[in-house]
Length: 242
Image (cartoon, rainbow, N blue to C red):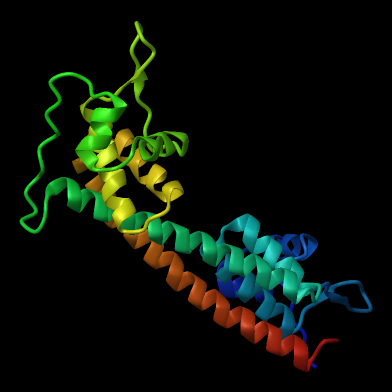
């Protein structure tokens, strides 16, 4: 069998030999064998493990990539695949949020013309009953949205009753629209918070393309990492003692 040195593995990826040794120490590579003189001797199994770990990083992040690779190297495949599934679930939540934000912005702009919908005219703050009637929902529904963090109305200093200003009405209309689309309240709360934080929907719009591009890039990275992880699993099954 021909063996590889740390420098041989490092050269393929533009790393330093010390980085390869560090990855082995952290458990991202299987323990290396040693020559009679004490030098590390790597094999194709180690080269495959390094390629897999480096592909996992952009797909899952450094921490999760380390968790996945350590579990794989130790033969704990259920743990490794659980970590992979966790990242996929996180990415799906990001996609759901992105889609909901896009739906909300389209609603704010009006459909189908794409013309920006003006902010609701509110001569004076609405009561909870007035807001509920405007939306055609029950008062209990508006209260549930507040409990979920979708709405955050101020309180009147004299009566401590809720007072919904123009921004609150906009948030409530977004919530109502997204609920009609069967989005869960936890997701709606995230979308409304994004709109609040941006202040101007144009600021949020400008971030959507970059957000979608990052999600697409991560999805593609996950596909590549999954291919290499599967190949590493097959290699371990064929040559578990290499």
